[in-house]
Length: 238
Ligand code: UDP
Image 1: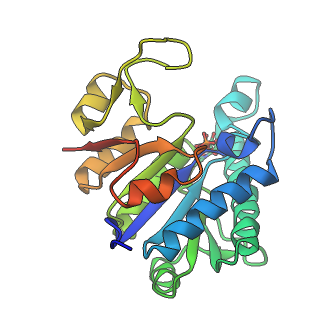
Image 2: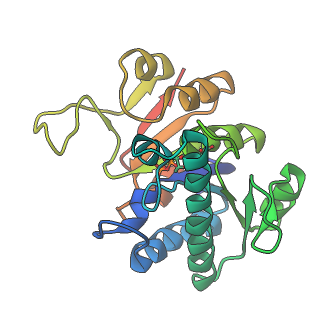
């Protein structure tokens, strides 16, 4: 088998990706399928860190619009990401992988606190490390948390698993002839306001020269293909 193109990556999965065909919450079959993809990646020799969103359970901005103080709502959103991280850890274990959850908001009885050097050791031992509770700060997103952890952990790719197989000029579900890009620059994404990741996540990745690879998290095998430098994806770099 050829050596993986990426030594260490951070995989960002949105909360919505865990819902499967449901409208809310966690679909176990979907989480298990993602875990199987992660297992393939680990077995192919790539160290994998993960950040999971919380949008399938709670989103701060929406709750703030209904009258909950924004910072308070965001803390609730961050707690939602911890539930998703624990569900993902359980799925990774069912798949036979060893993993650790590290939370940006310490909660010792549930998981480890985020300690970069400790995360490093876990990865060296072949464990998947799931970073929960976003950045630990309100007014941020898990996209920014993913870019931040990717930089801290010196990842050589930030993989964003989405509903579709890359970045398009318009929503391909609504616009039939939307154009799909193989590559884009960070500048393109920022100036053309392409909906990939929020601007702070893109800027942070640009500053740290970490390519963002957008691919479909719903296609079994797509992650492993991307890690071999094959498959359909959009690569965002300088
Ligand atoms: N959140 C936050 N700070 C962070 C990361 C997340 O306050 O660093 C909160 C925010 O309220 C957000 C929610 O957690 O709406 C869920 O995260 P996100 O919306 O990024 O999840 P996704 O869209 O990826 O499912």
